[in-house]
Amino acid sequence: MLVVIAAVIVLRKNATVKVLDLLVPVMAVLYFVITLFIIFTNLGSMPGVFKRIFEEAFGFRQAAAGGFGVVLMNGVKRGLFSNEAGSGSAPCAAAAAECDSPVKAGFVQALGVFVDTIVICSCTAMIMLLAPEDLVQGLSGMELLQTAMHYHMGQFGVIFIAATLFMFSFSTFLGILFYARGNVAYLFGDNWGSQTGYKVLALVMLFIGGIAAYTFVWDLGDVGIGLMTIFNIFMLYPLGEKALKELKIYESEKKKK
Image (cartoon, rainbow, N blue to C red; front, side, top):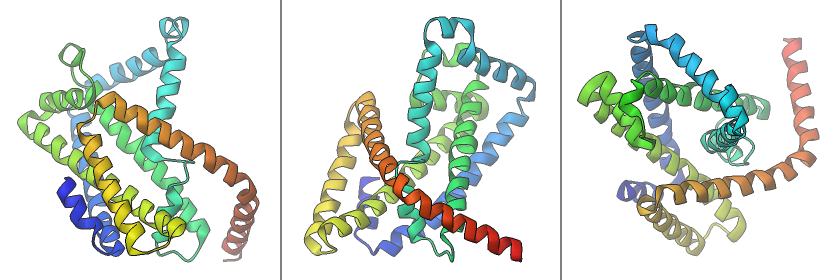
């Protein structure tokens, strides 16, 4: 993956956008369709799944042990890591889109949060929760997901989830590196030295992330996303008035039509 990403980021920035335009819709639809198939073949187990979700999140035992706070904290961290809502990275993607109104771009970004977290992440949860509890007990991360997929779809499921993980990771890396390219150009100038230095540093960090301890990578990501969100919140306040003004103009134009 590191070699493929290196090949893409040394190309023009339009190459990154074109690759993402092709990859993201295809992999999201395929993942959603496979999950629907798994759900329909296990419809009888769905009531038990939802019962378990609410019991584990809001049960008396979890509340007494402070488990609710842990669930809430992890939910916020993983949700923010997943959709990056409020962290300030989404405007980089919105700015690269061809759109005649900033309000339309904002609506699309809001829809992206819904699709990413509510749809895609819920698909992963359903796949894992519909597998027998004794089969996946004690497992976590990709081992848990692959075991669940093997139960549902055999060896094809294992191969499919590995390919899906590759595509999700690949597109995520490309998107983040695309954001960084524009930010580096703004801070240090769009010159050969700054862009080459950023690309080398990015590839080194990708390599380290691939071999570092699992928990270390998550913790590092949580710190980075958290700092981004804090800085971004302070900037949202002075810009909020302008955003609301654009929204009112857009709504008034829609009413006239």
